[in-house]
Length: 288
Image 1 (tube, rainbow, N blue to C red):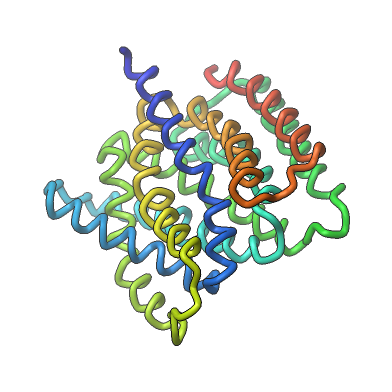
Image 2: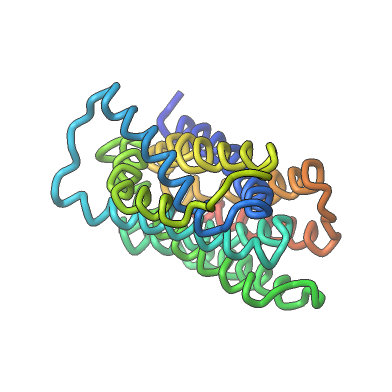
């Protein structure tokens, strides 16, 4: 099996794992403060990453890699988890998942900036059209939708796309699990004190689903998913494999409906299908 196909397989596994992130976060923020949740998940994942780096010693990143690692940390360790947790106080996980349709475009844009990938105009046409459809969906929702929640989700997508592209680029040098592990370890001296500082006075009354959700977003969303995802981006190409993220809304909507009993409206489903069609077109022209 060639490297490109292997990259798609790794990328798909990563997307499957990520699809449970927003529903799990929605469950967790019902009991945990979103700020504490963001710091706690990064701390737990950082401790596990440190253990991995000790158990399987790796060459330390060069000084020139530190900027990229800090971008990864700001984008996917701090920014995306915190912004989505704050957003999910105002919107449902089903609504937030549709914004994932913007991630392929954000990843491709930052991939072009950071790696020099230059997809042809047709690629950008499909990508931009998909983004317009997502934005249009958010703007036409009823009064139960929240502008603040939508804005927070949009910002989360921007920082996440940057972190994805930067991590995919660096993974070609360091390896997929090494990139996310080093980013988590670099974040740990900040995340651990903040987690302690924002810790609730008591954990009494925290329901079991909240603990399960915290464990999921800490171990799978923050660490294991990125092991597969960054390796997939590195091997299969950032712009091309990034399109797999359009499977995430479908998986996430299904989880939101089955596990959280949330209503998945027809507009949500139609928006996801329309965006998927646009990104499928973009994928066709991902390479110049």
